[in-house]
Length: 277
Image 1 (tube, rainbow, N blue to C red):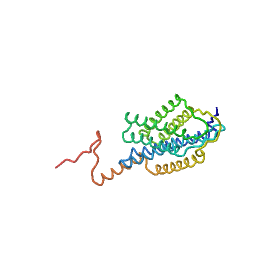
Image 2: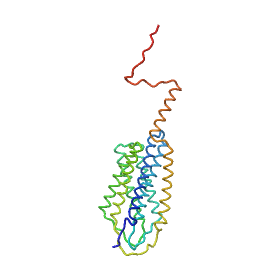
Image 3: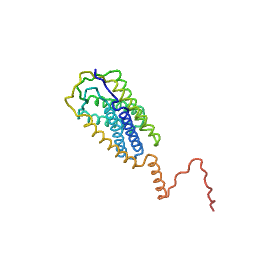
């Protein structure tokens, strides 16, 4: 049986994969916080789409394939099918978008949260196994169904938690902490899924596909560049607290222009009025 190596280059690939996952999660959560503060449907939808690309594209898909750069099989070169690999990226973004839009407009009510978590979790798991199925090699791939089931369960739980965080996390420190946790969950799902894989057969050269560095290198760099651009967009846009302060400031200015004063707070002391003559 060919020997599989998940950490061919040591801890470099898993650490880079984890960093990519955390970066995508942090960017996505920052985008969803701005979606919550949006005052119109189009702006909210745009921010949710940004979050979907960041979480699904970088946090999930890039994490998976950066980790796969460290996966090798002894005496068995691995190529990748281009259409199937690209399709797996689209699947990751679309299923995360479905989940974010469900909770982005429906809130964290159990029905929307669980529905979104199941859809996104199953989709993330599907992306993972599509990515594995996109490998072209001379060996034959077999999977342990119990371990596959465990990886799918982890994906659903992680996706549900991510959606809850997208609705409830506020503040930079909380966003960073949530991103670190999401990175652990996505990485855990990936390596659990990889543990389900067994490769049998004889060593040989794959008959089709493109080498990992020729295909994954440009794709990963392209999505990473897009993520950097999204980070700049997120950083340039005011966050949820800043937008709330701006709205309150504009409301005060509007009241001053119209001469309308806000109602006195309950329990506030009233100034005595001069007696009428």
